[in-house]
Length: 340
Ligand code: NDP
Ligand code: GDR
Image (cartoon, rainbow, N blue to C red):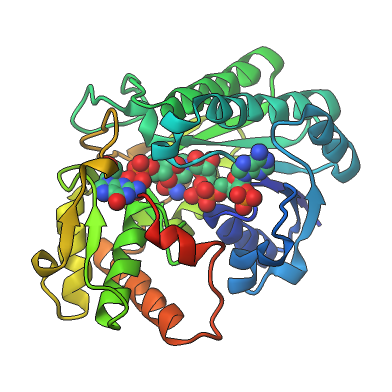
């Protein structure tokens, strides 16, 4: 039985990846950072019905000693580094923490692999945010990077360190440059969940309006379940490499809102307000990925359209709000009212 270690196991991708790996017969270990709110830990894993099948180990991405200890104890065959301070907006308020976790944290895991388990295969969660101020209309593995936030700069450092550990130490280390991917398990602070949760609240009479930031930005949105499949495929290749993972379609926040409200028979223009407080100091205006390499070499392709994704997310949020017995994601009630 193969062993996989997943950092960020309690996040959106960690939950879907755990489910995928368990279905393939892996023994799945997850790095779990300590929280004072132990009662809400692992809600996403619970939602997918896999909480009792994964082994959670205490540790923090910022702590090299715990990374080495875990690598020595678990002796994983595959390591997926998904943990990060992943919210771009927050990275301007917490630039040092974002650098320490999203950037240096990845190197803690790379170092732990190099020192304690060099034969393990490593996956780094790189991001389309690294393209930032767009240099080419459609972005692929050869497009120059131009990070536009502390988050993107930290991810770029982790990305290049992954390439360097591959080339310097011969680690089987791959980076997935993943474009935005969403699901009912998406954190409530990201725009898709803000929209689908807002639509559900308004439809059920729990709210009267939804406040958003920049409606003009466009993103290439896919489904997280498809994207974790691409992660696994990268790690299975004989030769490690970097791959763009995207749908090849870009849509504005305005159009996303239109689609989500239309799903419940409402006109978005009657409910959406904008606030300058939700604008970012620097914006990534357009992202549109070309995943030809992943399609050709990994045989990967997205299976869910944006329309299907939005419908699934709106329905899940309606169900959450309708049923008090359904699992709520961590801090959902407070975050929903907070900043975007
Ligand atoms: P989430 O924000 O949902 O999950 C982040 C995870 O990182 C959580 O499990 C969180 O734990 C954990 N984490 C944060 N800080 C630490 C720390 N100091 N020590 C240990 N664990 C920590 O992200 P996603 O699942 O959406 O994304 C997964 C990865 O992919 C991230 O690195 C993200 O930046 C990257 N990415 C995501 C994309 C997307 O569209 N979703 C696109 C491209 C890249 P806790 O639950 O305790 O907060
Ligand atoms: P992003 O995702 O920054 O692309 O990073 P997010 O959903 O936060 O923003 C997407 C776009 O929507 C605009 N926007 C708003 N965003 C939020 N969060 N809240 C709002 O109210 C709002 N209104 C408009 C933003 O300005 C932006 O243009 C995500 C994260 O998962 C990263 O970790 C990952 O690396 C990238 O996707 C790829």
